[in-house]
Length: 372
Ligand SMILES: [Fe+2]
Image (cartoon, rainbow, N blue to C red; front, side, top):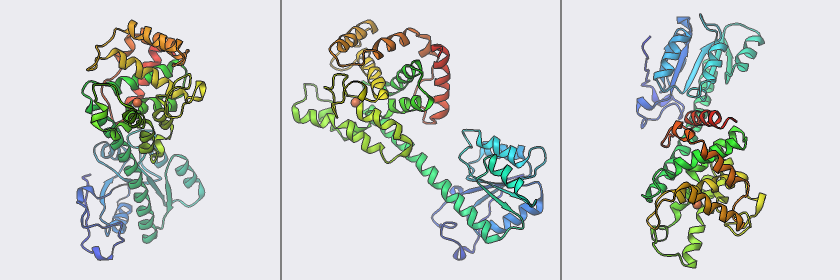
């Protein structure tokens, strides 16, 4: 069935969230109605037609999945009973797919009793309504669910903007190239070798891109100064750790990354910055990313130095460990990880903002090669 788009001319009667004359119809919230019974779909269309929603319709689950694959859907309204696949089965499938799991689902039924509601909510439906439907209840419920979906979308957009900003910061320095990309992979490899859980590995992945985002606050004259920094300039440079944490702090999804951003320049003996933490008081994820960061800085060319071979880089890192600067266990472990060179050739390159999906690919590849 072709997608239908309904726009009311009775805008003046509408709830403010439903209608905004500035909104292009292509960007109006999309509601997918799935019901095998024509009259049920027609009733829902009638209840929602006053609002400026883009209404899509399907009569069975297979048709609905085709629409979900090609359209941006903001809300699914599905009947508990459908041919071929039940509402709860459909719901479970939508919620187990990373691409669709954030789409809210409103389940409906004509069957009285609590069993249907329990099955629906247990399968992942966000709301449940039993017929006969009260038009205003339906409209209010749909409006509230779309409002929540819009809030989730804006959070996702904010996170994407931060990653883009972090890449822009990195691009300011043309010599660092794919530094963030390599760091994310090195950090995850070392984390996987330590047997860290997925949320820690994801924090390392994100930390690879975001750890230096605070450099957006450091002027070019300091960031790219050819000679040594004076005390005042060095103070500004060191602030990139604290400023980076401030930038990312409002994003709750980045809470696990904040210690990486703040503490990636601490030293094992307490002579680092910004807090002078020492030993295991330095968050483990920050210590991991630091090892990866130093190795990458040593093995890539910069305006003031050539790229060093891996052996030479590790000689320097072991020297720094003897001086008390680095975690004495992590440096040799990282060296061991890098020996499995086939690991890096198998991993995807480039920053993929789709995040979790590419993360899964990387993680699977790492676990296979590291045999953890
Ligand atoms: Fe840094």
